Image 1 (spheres, rainbow, N blue to C red):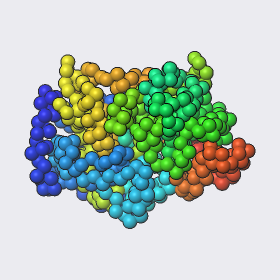
Image 2 (image 1 turned 120 degrees about the vertical axis):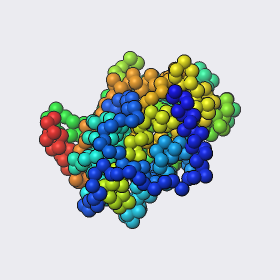
Image 3 (image 1 turned 30 degrees about the vertical axis):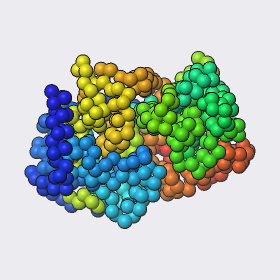
Image 4 (image 1 turned 45 degrees about the horizontal axis):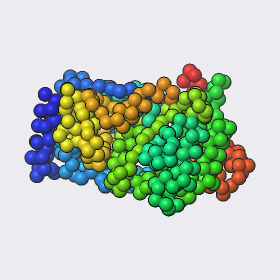
Length: 530
């Protein structure tokens, strides 16, 4: 039945190519009276069956929804991508996506907010940036709290994560929910084999591997042309936090027993993680240009680097696909948790439960009737047929059905990675499932096993539900305060400043506002009953 449903959607979608841009006008009655816009640990979730009656009267389908979405790939999904066409067929709505490269996304969204030219559905990646918070407080986005429970699938999004993305207690954002144990690394397993090494389990073992990858000719070409690890200019703060947590330290902020807050920058463990990166950099194990490098992937896929960190282990199949496109015989594997010593305590960064959020601007969605239509469109993306499309792509092309479940060959996984994976940035229902997997590739099974098992070892950032007015006034997560300390981190890693200079920079950061941020988080933490 599910197979026929997906096939029908695809065939109908392909027939609809010539009708793109000619969809029917909005019809039906709004769930409420039309009003002007105001002026001023994620769990695996099963998609709700379609046809529910949670809303007394469903709004009619909106003709077109415009979206602003980030992507991290060599090419954007085409407008006639089969999933885009299937969305049109299933929802009755044309989808017009403005794809923006991830590295340029913050600049683009700030420009669009300033000019009040945001599309109807807008991804917000930095939800604590001053730009977003000030825009939300000024009335630029709808507070969705009064409406979410009217929709069958949106109302099933993880309530804790929904709370974590609130601003001043208002629900301007719908989280793109993600698994919580998701960070890790990808490493050239064929290079390990060439050097007689095993997958790392401790930080010392990883260091030995990176050294051998740099100096022991792991690709056996007789040329000194390899490095251990590829990094870029934006991932340093995440990578250093991951190393800190591996060592038993905090995830960004630490809530103390007396209710006070301590930043990771003030901890001995974070200093050790930066020193580790400093030593690796000094030894030549990390690409020397990482402070200005925007593309750490090219070092890995070209065969120059033997390892890179992954913000999401699920990206491993795509990275291996990118690698094999240039080096067909290359092999890679993944790891997630490294301990301080053999058999030591396990810790992993507890991801916040979402990667970016979705907001609906009042500047482009001007009435409550139109808002309900947009929310109805988003809600339909959580229905079973849509979940299958986002999770697996097109039956027969990127997956097959066997024994009542999904099977995917290496070739089908490559098709999905290259053609369909980026489209998951559209949906808030990333963790919703319908079809289950009956057979997986060894890599896919390992990813699932690691992410499920290691949730038990997650360390979370206790500041997530709170907003610091000081941090916001100083530019938020991309502003003066954050930039100062991150630049100091980078300068210590590359040897531009000493360890003593780094410690002085931390004290300067505290005086610039870091101490006040800690106090503001602590006040809200205590007020919440902690």
